[in-house]
Amino acid sequence: ECRELSTETTDGAISQIILATWLLSEWAKAESPWRPWFVLLPSTFDAFPIALPDPLLAAAFEGSELLQELREVQNAWNLTHTLLSKSSERYRSVAGSYEAFRAARLTVLSRTHGLSGALGDALVPVADLLNHDAEAPTWWGPAETGGFQLR
Image 1 (cartoon, rainbow, N blue to C red):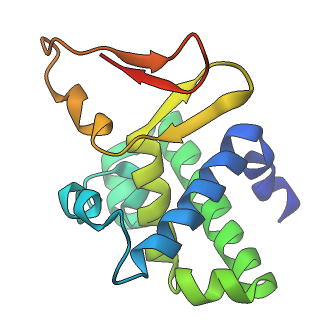
Image 2 (image 1 turned 30 degrees about the vertical axis):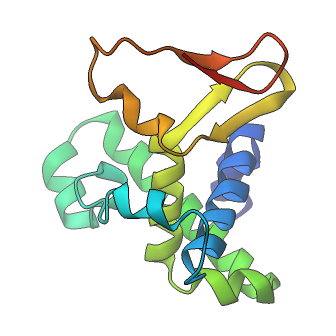
C-alpha cells in the first residue's frame, strides 16, 4: 500500500487532493457561492482514461506502458480515498463515494492554473473556460505582484 500511495505524496498530488476535497465540500453545499461556476463544468468524466473500468482500459491500452501507469494511478487514488475515508469524518461527510472523489480530482486536473513559486496551483473559476479557443485574445498567469492575472 505504501508503494502505491507514494505517487500521492508529491507536493502536486497533495495540492490536488486539498483542492479536490474543497470542491467536494462546496459541491455538497446547496447555497455555495461557486454554484454558478459548477453548473458550467462537465458533469461526467467518462471519457477520461483514468475513469475507465479495467476491461475498457485493457482493451484501449493493451501492450502499452500507459495501461500500467493508469492502473497505478487508479490504485493510488482509490487508496487515498480509502485512507481519507477511514481517518477523517469531515472527508467522509463530503466525499461519499470514490467516484465523487475521482470526479473532484479530475475537475482539479482539468481546471487548475499553475502559478509560479510557492503559490502552486489555483482554481480560477470562469478563467478555466477561456482556454477552449487557441486564437482567443486572452492571457492569464502569475501577476508580477503575486496572485493571478487575467488580461
